[in-house]
Image (tube, rainbow, N blue to C red; front, side, top):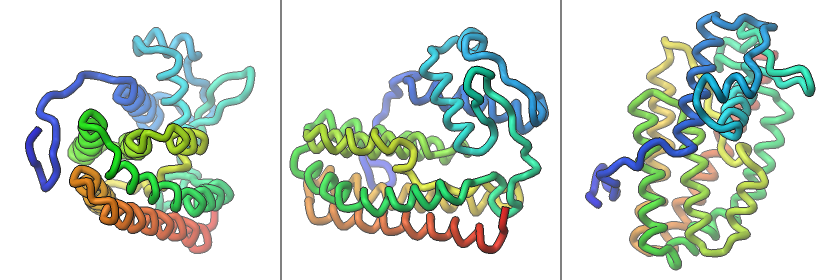
Length: 252
């Protein structure tokens, strides 16, 4: 490993894992929708057709569709299929439709999760193995790669938190995160091209917060790891509350 921007990173890529496949398929479908290839109300190809088209498993397709649902681009109708929603309904500020009740619920998850993840960071600093440390650095590197490629960091962000939980060597920490799924990761605002710089700055800020956590775990500094995770989650809660403010300012 070598140090890059203050943290150790891997030199060798590990190829296309399940996470990268989900991201690629999700981005392909997202662009097809936003470009008008699929119009509001259109039904997307079936799950089987999508697996054949993209050459991936059903699990990858389901996770990619789940990401599109989270973005408010599609809805899944039981027994009927996947349908495209109208993009013209998105608030102009955020560029996408976000359900207020879900944001409130996710904020509640963040508040409950904070003490557990703070503890997880401290334990990871004490207990992580060299292989687990390597995985944490790899996840952090992938977030930076997403930023450089102007891609969503949500999936890579979640993978990093899972890796930290795994490094506690107490399976209950990871099980807790898996139970809450994508609610674990704060929703970032999707902005139009004129505000792309704002989106990039937001992602870099998240990356910097993660960097403090990762370095502390690598240094086996329990107190610093706890403090860095506390600061990160406090910032996440603030960002969620900002989303709720948007609802009051730009009602849907």
